[in-house]
Image (tube, rainbow, N blue to C red):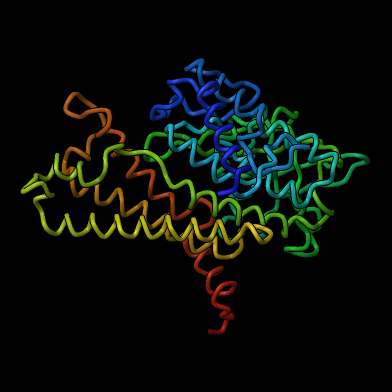
Amino acid sequence: MSENLEAFRKEVQDWLAENCPPSMRTPMPEDETVWGGRGITFKNPDSKKWLDAMGSKGWTCPTWPKEYGGGGLSKEETNILHQELQRINARPALLSFGIWMLGPVLLEYANEEQKKEHLPKIVRGEIRWCQGYSEPGAGSDLAGLQTRAVEDGDHFVINGQKVWTSYANYADWIFCLVRTDTSVKHEGISFILFDMTSPGVTTKPIKLISGSSPFCETFFDDVRVPKANLVGRLNGGWEIAKRLLQHERASISAAGFTGGSSMPMQDVAKEYAGEKDGQVADGSLRESIARHRMDSQAFQLTLKRSAEESKAGMGPGAASSIFKYFGAELNKKKYDLLMDAMGTQALGWEGDGFSAEELDVTRSWLRSKANSIEGGTTEINLNVVAKRVLGLNDHQ
């Protein structure tokens, strides 16, 4: 390693020692997750200190250019930063759809004014974003969306409905697909940004079988949005939409899926299904867990290789659909194995007979079923792989 990189590592180590609070070096409870936003509250005051520190350095988005609030780090420097954060078990300072999905496409498609307006706020966690894509009649066929944006002077007037809008009831702004030309399908879609407090915007949480409500119905009734909020060209939103979905699928795959037991699966199996000679007693269950661990390790190594290869290109491509599909199946299998290992203790909903962790496994198992829908359904992703990766056509 060069002297410059060694010096940078020492700089990072010294900075983390001074700025990362001890409580930020512990596993993060779900209720201390930091999503940012205008109305953010911090259950743990150290979370704010950590976010402010990382945001001021631009290290929530280390590769983004400094002129937009990012860290301006090279690939090698970013790897060192991540290594040092992992070394001290630092929590993520900020989780953000702005970081994972919107920011990368703004860097690629937005004009200079839009970049300077929105990117620094994403880096510092000042604005929380949600995604307006799916509609009641346009889910798998996203390009069939009907939410209309009609030009009216310097504004668009938007009417329509979105569904499965993650955390829309907490979001400050939305990045949204709207139809600006009804005479064509894909070429009649535009990509626009607007404030969720705009008159005419309402949200309604959707309660899932897991008991949680991470998704919403979102309604637009004569919402007036300045034309300056259009990203890219008019009727050019489908290209941006596809690129954003690639980033979304890549981020879902890389981040994995959360919830459930924090213990290694083999330890859970030993505790609930029995142990013999230091191993899981049930041979079939032991083999399934070992296979899952190998698949998980291979998947992580493949993601790492892909991330390194993509640094030389424009970003994630169609292969992100492979990763999203496999990551979803891997996570669903994880919870199926946990259910097998824990038996009836993984089937509780409430009551003194179950621990909080056991109840979380139940809900996480139910929640995992949505993994094959969110970020593009399994069927859609397999179609993308067939056409864009394998080169098959509709008649093969």
